[in-house]
Length: 101
Image (cartoon, rainbow, N blue to C red):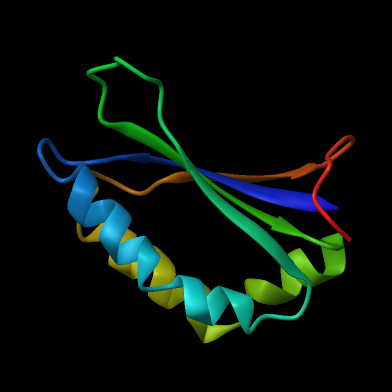
């Protein structure tokens, strides 16, 4: 499995709208071949506006193929509406998980 980890700096007071915007993308994600999971992470009690969005894919090929699909850019543009600047995006290999097969 592979994960795309995207770090956004969310505009002050816009975290809920940011999360709602991504929630609207979930059905599109589930339609993508190889999609496993979406997680939005923030540090509890942290006043920082940073949020990490992680999508998990069955293979590196499917992760990379998702970047050639319009849904990916729609999801990023929805999130950017509530973000400052462009996010940091990188891919990582998942070396341990207990996601169901």
